Amino acid sequence: MADAFPKIPSIPFEGPKSRNPLAFKHYNADEVVDGKPMRDHLRFSVVYWHTFRNRLTDPFGVGTAVRPWDDGTESVANAQNRVRAAFEFIQKLGAPFYAFHDRDVAPEGATLRETNQNLDAVVQVMKEEQQRTGIRLLWGTACLFAHPRYLHGAATSCNADAFAYAAAQVKKALEVTHELGGAGYVFWGGREGYSTLWNTHLKRELEHLAAFLHLAVDYQKQLGFQGQFYIEPKPKEPTKHQYDSDAAACLNFLREYGLMDHLKLNLETNHATLAGHTMQHELEVAAAAGALGSIDANTGDPMLGWDTDQFPTDIYLTTQCMLTILKMGGFKSGGVNFDAKVRRESFEPIDLFYAHIGGMDAFARGLKIAAAIRKDGRLADFVKQRYASWDSGIGARIEARKAGFKELEAYMLKKGEADPNVSGRQEFLENLINEFI
Ligand code: XUL
Ligand code: CO
Image 1: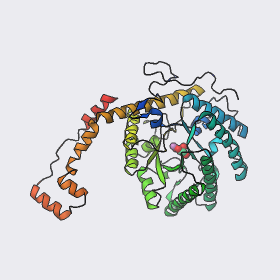
Image 2: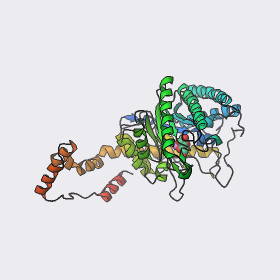
Image 3: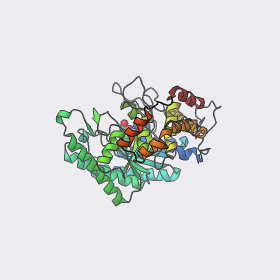
Image 4: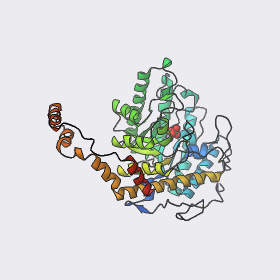
């Protein structure tokens, strides 16, 4: 196959003074930050679905994407060629990972058997391309939301056959993820939710979702797949209410059904904002439970209330992400996965490069800024001081569960009043952060 991006060289690092739009200004893969090369901190990943399958349609218009390497057919040969174009892109960009859904990479056949054969034929090329380039799979997943068989959901469908079909599909997706040496596997509940409660047995659907995940864990063990399982919260779209609505709801679900040891969270910025949270909130909630696994890096548009999946360029956002990730000791199996798409107006192949370069540079800056804030230490010291009353005396006795209500009453009767002691200093801290940005 001829090169898909013949005019585009491998993207170099040229530093902040460069004016070359096809160069990194901040992402320098080998540069050591806080004891580790940027490459290993950030573990950037390109998504197959948006970058290679999204035709840039919207509800009002057809696709606009110009993709000269793609003949537009649903043939296996076209799917195999697309893989070669994808790996050329990822290699030129210098991202170490990618992620895909089963149906992104290979066409659905007339039967499940034929669909599985199509997938095998394309996975062979993916394997060859992984070996040729050294690019690795961050995670695989199954598309359990596009086909009409899943219109009522997959694991939470009212139809047991839809559950069975989804199980067969995930079984195969796990097998190919394992074959490709995937570092993880994601469960995003595409249509696992409801449009109206008038027709929905909510408790039964939740139990089915839990059963589905337990069956997946069983099969993971049978396969010997060591990759990390993740669940990806999202509150709405396509359903009115998705069961995995936010980090707290996912954690509650995992705890209720005995799944906490088996799944971590894959958090996405635009899903956080749809849930009425900041990404920083979602990250902190997951990290506090020891369950922050990976992130889908993107952003929404505050003027648009839907899942616009834009590339992240906001340095405050990337700084907040990297502060929590550094605090938890870095990614283990996860990474910064660009679940983002170019705008419908950005239809040329080169726009895919600009988009990813911008996202990678924004995260590289976020990483450097977060590392500098941590090295400076004033922010962490402030927080530590703010809770100093818990480090000794009555606070330490409460934390150790030694003081009961009787002792606390006696303590306050003697002391008289709880002094608000110090200001929260929000403005002071916002200024402090701005010293670094
Ligand atoms: C949908 C979404 C998915 C998951 C994988 O909003 O984020 O692409 O990341 O199924
Ligand atoms: Co996502």
